[in-house]
Length: 298
Image 1 (cartoon, rainbow, N blue to C red):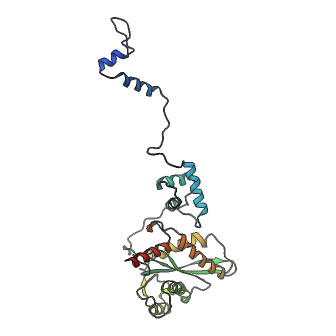
Image 2: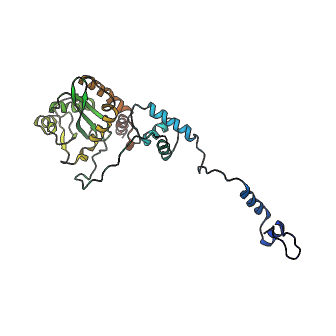
Image 3: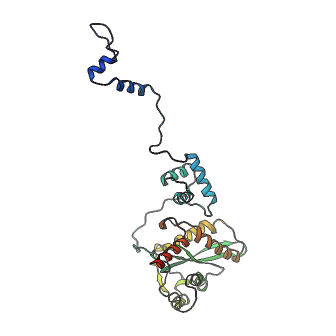
């Protein structure tokens, strides 16, 4: 409008006259004109500036993954380990950078299931209220197929016992529980584990007469899961998946004895360093210590 020509004087109206007629300050006109003339700025992240660039944070993420004693940890545990090192970053940002750098473990979508027999919860509020036990198999070079038995606490997710044996008998299935009784209750005698429940499936080892008799001798209540409902023993099932991904599927063992020693070594590493999300990314052994300290203080 300021460049328009007056039909009577044949002169431009000018910025001053146009702004006076429109009731606008000339500073507004010049500011708008400067914004239109300036080159467009590249899009930037909103909010306060972060302490690390994406490249720097990606390097920190790679260092955390490389130094972790475990494999295939997701973005939540990577975020927790970064936070423990004093490196602050939002979980969505860590997920984005790990996805861009192809640092996420491959996964596959599950299939929707039908109605479940088990709709409640199997976790507990205190340790030594319920343990889950189950078995899996692996292969050794010299001894061939081997059975691996486990026992895990439903509260802290702490491994209380691990055992490997050539034969998967009912007596071998009892060994993880015996290890846990000695570690957690201090003695192996009649009613030494009174008040404890053991969750197991309907495998022949666990439903055998000898297995059930020893549970009763120790004061343990047998708690079998529903038939055809593995989620009823989900704590033990999930622990076995972790055991496979972190040890059984990534190392080769020549003998049963070599595997047995590796299981005991890995048990300590898992209990002291594995991060449990539902416990605010604390290790299972630390969760137990914190709960016991709270009970003593109360």
